[in-house]
Image (cartoon, rainbow, N blue to C red; front, top):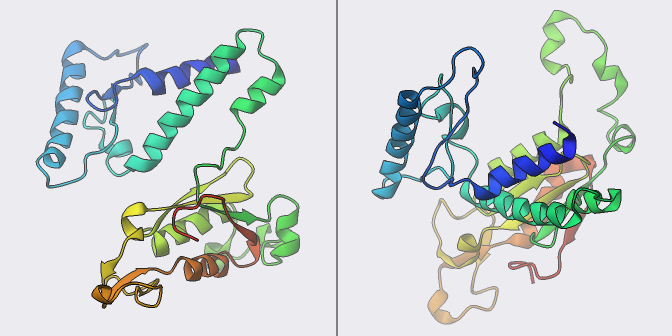
Length: 263
């Protein structure tokens, strides 16, 4: 399949498939041992069972289920990821991209294809701009060619083969600040991490041990007397900590116009 029709077919699958109520059964052995009707029904039944606890209010329903004959319940790929908000954003972007491709037609110009693949940041609240490509070793001297030479066995754990600085950064940001924000990495250019504040965490909450970190009293922010003891996220402090977590690979932090939490 040519790249452009293949991309269009994939986007059409994302935008037309009934992800909410149907498992996508991937036939991994179509030529030698194709999926039978009984196996297909079993995959669907197991996917429905996985959604049942969430419907009863005892869990979070996965936004989609990918099943194979070897993994009929779809637990290998879609039990924990993706989360609901990133998946909804993925579907929205797929709708936009497919519309662009279909409007361009079979004689799509290169500029129109690039428009489909361009980076759209208007839906985010902040961007972490990173040093990438040739700039990485210059700004991060610890990541140099010398780290990739052969080493003795006792030092193998520090070998940086396969290291993805942007993924390491996003993982650490999610670990520390995942309660307050969602983080996306642009792995194609490798020069940007997008931040989306969670609206549910932007409101005031009673002060507690669990909610003490990265917050400050609402009274300091101009809250009324009834809000004594309430706290809100300290987003300015968190932005500063984002830079500290990223260290030398973060070259700038941009708060986008219309950010919902940062004033």
